[in-house]
Length: 444
Image (cartoon, rainbow, N blue to C red; front, side):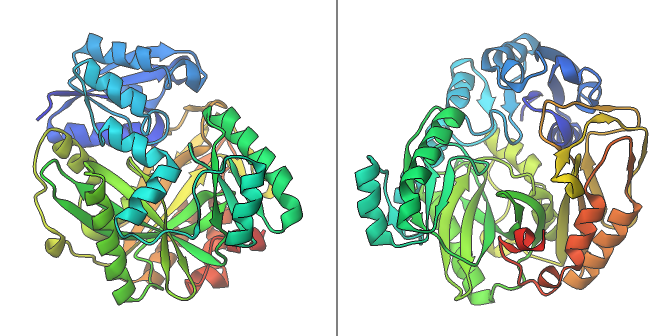
């Protein structure tokens, strides 16, 4: 087992990893930007190093600075969290070249699954259902020919990156040229790669993701699903597990497909296969996230498996301590992302100092965060400041528990979205679990 791990991240996920390490008896090293000198993860870690200026590109994305901090602190491994460098194949290779263990899959796997066109081909060859579409588009003429075959509406999607960038919905042939130019330009600017491919636009659908965990001995297990269909501009707001609308036979097929997917790429560590699930009970591979997900706590709640600890154990060369047959799913968990933004003012970001903080309590209520009373919320990073997670025996009970927890949460000094999320939980589509990826837009 490792004796010291550097956490190449900030905010709640850095705190989450530090806590797991402390429970495992592992020393921790934090890195921070100049804007995060007073951040909670800095004070919780055993050591900390400033890696650059406030902007992410100068600090948390500064690979050489992060590697230097790991080398200086004599850390043996780096946990990347999510976002930032977590799905960067070059960073994973740099870790290996400098004698550091990257807590995640191999650089080769990250590169293969990060190329969404290659990922589609890999999953198709492995027998996993994929969305009807085509491979990389060569030019506008190729796009027009492919569109005739696929049919409208369709999606243009960037080969690289994520977060909804480089994606365009094309409803009719006359929209194709402008959408193609916009998607390729945005992808090139955001990811340095303007390549795009096409998929049939499936609508209405649920966004279902399956959590997998794999070791270096060829063992792959699936830890069930999460319903992540409450989204705004492709960004999730509420996640839950299980997805109660999915029939058990379909769930079993999705689990089998996920295990096949993990085996096909010789996966190691924690990862997520994302699917689209339609009204006819069909599911299709969308993409793979080769890292820990923001919403991993709901899976931990219903399986009682600590994903962060198992990430670390697998990276250290340990074998998984359980099989697919031994995994049990109990109860229901819901997560709400608490964002520093004003939903009633076009989701305008909010920053400032936390003047008062009260965190909800009670049985099976969890708040993963890095904020504390008196801390400053800087304007340089993602707006998420915490994740409120609840667990109960039934979904109805979990919804009531979450609404009560959101009402109890007090964060003064900034604007946040807790009351908006409580309203979402009362929406008819959410209550009856028929909500799809478009329902939040319709509600707004």
